[in-house]
Image 1 (cartoon, rainbow, N blue to C red):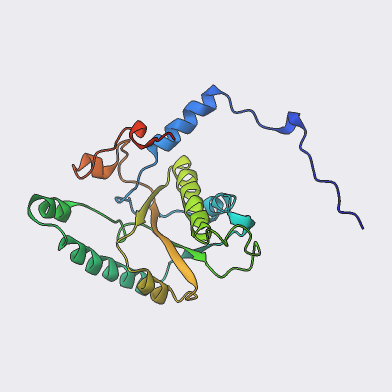
Image 2: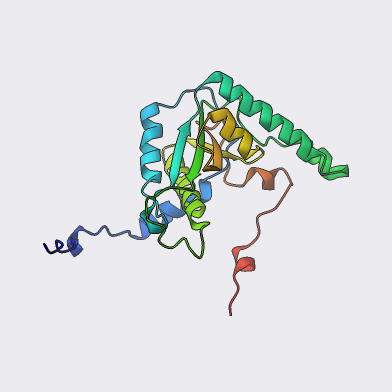
Length: 223
């Protein structure tokens, strides 16, 4: 039996993104911030599922869709995550001295206690989906696919007035243990999610004097 002909979308059905949309999209990208300060208001679970659904539309190598989203609602597990963050943060402080150490000690680097939603995002590094296509030469593209999904999630959240913060000061193996997920899952992001207490267009670490944002032209190289 012959395979069915591929579905071709009529040109009239393809959306047109005009200049007004371009401007709004730029606003969304510019106003997406790493949020560490949240109000106590809860976020509806259906809304979290909605933005996760949009994140799952992201591209992935071989259409493998290796992302795994873990909603962390158990108070004990959350408390253990906070403990791990605090231990790692204390250890990281020891890497600095002088003014840099003093500044580091003042930074708010996570909203784990305040955020109503904790979301851990993993990559299933052993997924059979996609049949390994495109991964022989760059197996890391599985994890890169999940990183792309996290960015989509971030933008989808911001478009709905929800703030998100990415916590990297954690031990991945410890998070895997605390959340009791398969050992072959690789932690990509631990996210704090909720409605932001304040809005800023500039990155918090820029505002705090830790690191200024560079002009994009600095990162463009021609060969």
